[in-house]
Length: 165
Length: 421
Image (cartoon, each protein chain N blue to C red):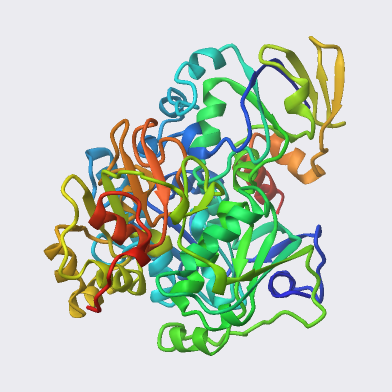
């Protein structure tokens, strides 16, 4: 599985309250959630994300609440993948479960600028910065997680597994 | 093995597990609330199974947007009510429960030695009872509804050993904020945090819950305290099924051990805009406030309300400060009435609201305008957490918040003369 697109960079400890503020949690339609993606930091983000982007973050990306609406808002705003130095664990699992690819990559914050073109290969863990012609080594995901992602999320994966039974 | 490893091994049907192992575990109980439940129900409907795996092991609690503040919220509540009825799931409606993390142990749904998951990040609160408890998302909760299982990576563990006696007006909240200040907002990411030592053994259930509740604020997968007589006493008459009190082995392994001595601790606050930005109250200077909030799954228990009432008795909150007191559950609310605490708060000019999450997550009730500052007993001070992205939130103990409500600025409770209620 490969994902590519221009980077939009944020810093450390990007929490779920800035990704999707609590007052929008009663919205259930993902496209409505997407209109408020990262509103806490940059209200123009949904406009920027429309072209299909890769969010680059620092340490502890997605810390805070368990709200799945946070990765949902990112996914439906046009985010193709989140690559960060490290993730908060619930956000990491939620992203995989809703079919938003995530990759942990130490050193990414310093090597990527906003608008750099990135290409991520999930099978090898390699993250290529096409603009700077540099390669970074991201953490490879276990096979069963890659399968959930390639199925499109946990529910789709579960449907498949239940059918097999 | 440490207690976390023991619970995961037992729930996975294995003799031993080690950090890094990925295990499929049986879930004892799964909880969703009104902001995570609707997505879970929707995801469950797509799996293709008619019935949940075990309707006695699922709990739905309305606590965030309650009572319904909009037609949209009312519709989500209605949808959850109807799903619970159709599946025969235990449902706590408005006025019948309160904040999920208080209701779960109060009503006997938390079982020591088992795996508990909940679609809320503060599910880690139940570690106070010697359970492995962790937060998950809605889709994963739906998968548990269908299968009763979840995959987990066995975490490395940090031991937080605490000794010494608290000074007056220094509370478990000051301890956990200090721990987070030292470990850092991501210092325990993916890890178990186990609280040990004589201070922890001497803590009440409420204090242990405050500690485990905020473990997630340093990134932890779970916070946990070994069960003992205090645990048994609380659970008596609440948990009816037999349970096992698992404990860490003497030679259990920890990635790191942190030592804390609370006898030197003073009241602290977490300053905007991260929970690890912790300073002694005595060092924050003159910080005027517009709102004071006493409540939440972190500090809305009877013990917390007693401390606040002791400080506020016979006094009046400062003009210009809105003071909200929100008991964590209907049970806590009734006890607060019986003990005369509600009378003290209302007499002081505070507003006592019905049990709910309240302003903690900025959903409704007590949101902040741009430029306003709130001192709060809740658990997060992120940008926009309680309303405007231009508002500031300081996190503190019930004693510090009560003292601050009286003076109109962030105040060390030890500087005020206190009277017993």
